[in-house]
Length: 173
Image (tube, rainbow, N blue to C red):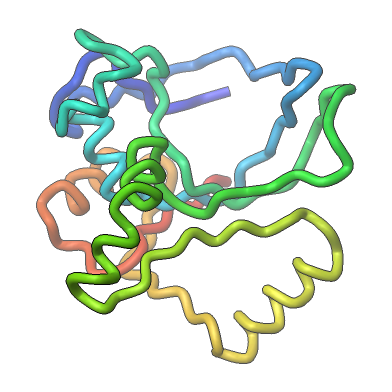
């Protein structure tokens, strides 16, 4: 399996396309065959190693050399201890999720903007409801640009330079 990896913090030029072993899920994990991913600010932060909280999982170099948190795909393999109901957080790194939980109420008071996380239980009825909201236009994703898998460094550069005005999507063939 191919992946773009980074072994040190830096600009998109540190990303290298490498052959890696296909992950095998543990008893409590699932394996997802990825069809598309999006690049966002948390990926940029992870790549450059700033702000400082990003380095909590690797002070001098990243512990997990593969970026990414927003994925679209299909469950390919399931560990034996998975519960019947799995929750997915949409968007962001662990640091970003902590920021939302800690500073969301303060941001609401200061700016009157609601900061929320989308948590969706994985069951048929809820997935159908979310799909209907998307297809009816009540929830509308904003996709700025699309790139192919081999263009990931270029897409990271685009996001890092502050050009993105919506999601930057990578399609995986």
